[in-house]
Length: 218
Image (cartoon, rainbow, N blue to C red):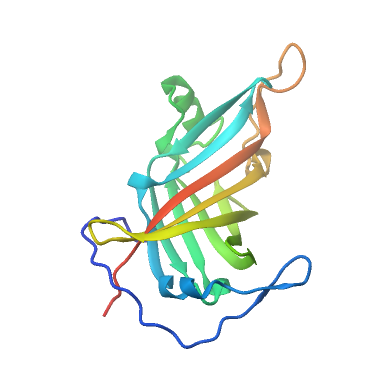
C-alpha cells in the first residue's frame, strides 16, 4: 500500500475520449457522471493531516462517545467517467484509536474490543462502486475486524476539488455507514441497573476524506 508523502510530484491525466456509462437510480432514472470529474481519474491516497476516519457509539444510553484512528495507509483509484471502476483499500492501525481518554483507549485496544496485540490491523477493501446521485457514490466493500470479514455499504458524497498553494491536487469526500459491532466479534458489554446496555450494538463509522493525487509512473 502507498504511504502518504508530501514530496510527491503531481501530474494531471490526459483527457479520455471514452463515453461515460449512466448509472441507474433506485427509481430507474439514469444518473450520468459529471463530465468535469473525468479529469480526476487516477490514483489518490488519503492525506492523514487533513482527514478523519472516526466512529461514534451510544454510551450508557444517554451520551455518545466519539473517537478516531490516527494511523492508516490507503490506496484509492477514482474514475470520474466510469465510477464503477473506482476502488479503495484502507488499512488502519487498531492501536492508534483515540477517544481523548487514555483509560478508555486502553480498554478499546485490549481483548474486550479490538485486541490490537493479536489483530494490529483493521481493513476495508471495496468490491463495488455505484453512482446513485449527482454527487453521491455508494461503495460496497469488505470490512475486516479481529480477523472477521463482513460486507458494509458506504455512502460517499463528493465535496470538491482544488489545487492547493503547494501544487498538490486534492479531492474531498464525506462518507458514513452504520454497523452492528457484534457481527465482527465485538460483543463485550455491561448491563445497566435501569436496563439496557452500557455500549450500543450500533456503531457509526465516519469518513471525512481529503485525498491527494499520487504521481503517475511514467
